[in-house]
Amino acid sequence: MRRGFTVVELTIGMAITAVLLTGLFAALQSSVDAYAKSSADGVNRLTSRLLVERIALLVRTGSNFGPLPSSALDDEVLSNVLELTTPTGQDVTITWDSVRETLEMDVDGVSATVLGGVTQSAGGIPISPFLLQYENGISLQRVTINLAVVPDVEHATAMDEGSETIRLTASVMPRAQLY
Image 1 (cartoon, rainbow, N blue to C red):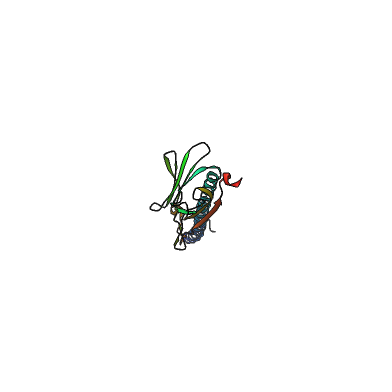
Image 2 (image 1 turned 90 degrees about the vertical axis):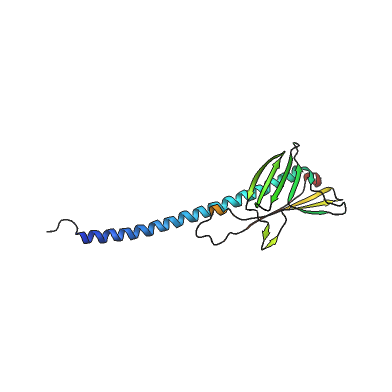
């Protein structure tokens, strides 16, 4: 009469269990990595969209826009900078820093980075973040915001082969021009 398992039976059972657990942990790690990647991508997209909406709101309600055309005969300005004054009198400057690839916002002399990974390159073609369209050289009619953002590389996983550029565009008119 036998009582219990032999050493060989126990060893085989532990080997099978180890193989099954290894497969389970690999599948679990892949699932966690995929979740982290999709979360980071979602956060980047959401942050970028919210920033474009915030800039659009500033343009809709703002006044005293810049930069102005170099000549009163020009009606368009492609710029890396957008300047405006809010209804409460704050001076806001939004600047694309091409070296650091960031969008900087300065409010009454207090500057902060509001978005990183702003490459401003679409398919290898450089694009300007702001197009200001004027009438008679001084009256702003429309601002087109055109941002190309690469998702944050700090959230990349081993499965990532490349990073997809997020393109965000908006065309906004100041409210003073709507009426």
